[in-house]
Picture 1 (tube, rainbow, N blue to C red):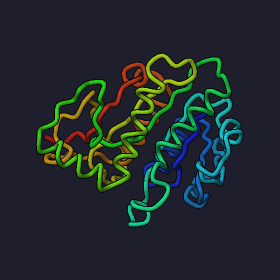
Picture 2 (tube, rainbow, N blue to C red):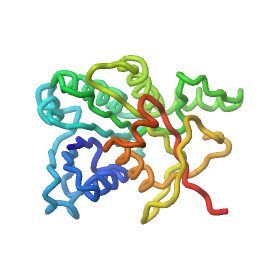
Picture 3 (cartoon, rainbow, N blue to C red):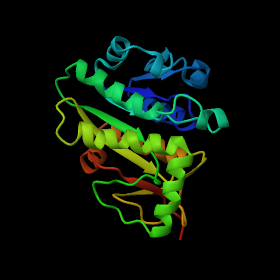
Length: 241
């Protein structure tokens, strides 16, 4: 049961690789800087592919995805002016589209699980999630002024609409954390079909390691996958009472 991880050099991607390896799962990690996984370099279950996912051609992507039971994307835009406003504007969307194409090209005997890290600021249009007029206005401005937000929306929408619920080769789940923060260990967290608070005016928090834990649970199947397949769960750290 091998998982292909893209965006493995990022803050959450590194944690996801660690979570999968801790479960005894083989991991193929595509990343530009292999040094980001130096602490795992001697683990037998890890295969590092040094590349940018968008620089790989379709045949290479299909080869790397072959035999994988799951693909997990932690891709995101670097939080710098160049990362936000420079090319590629559709980093996540194009990667999701091409990875799904690579999976389909392999004609797997069973559908491959695709787990996408996204954001609580993106609505699940399948559920007609209610937004206040003020939040609609702010989201519209963010969509127009901050290209990575539109990219995240389009990536999730590709899975919802182009892949849908009955694709023969790909099944999917989109993980929507709220404001990300760093913790050293997995803590209690909760998942909901839709936001339970405003991502703009009353944001919650989600630790990156909890996101990685949840994505690993989904990628490896079991109860989490049965519960959330074809959905866009929003996860929050459970606050102490």
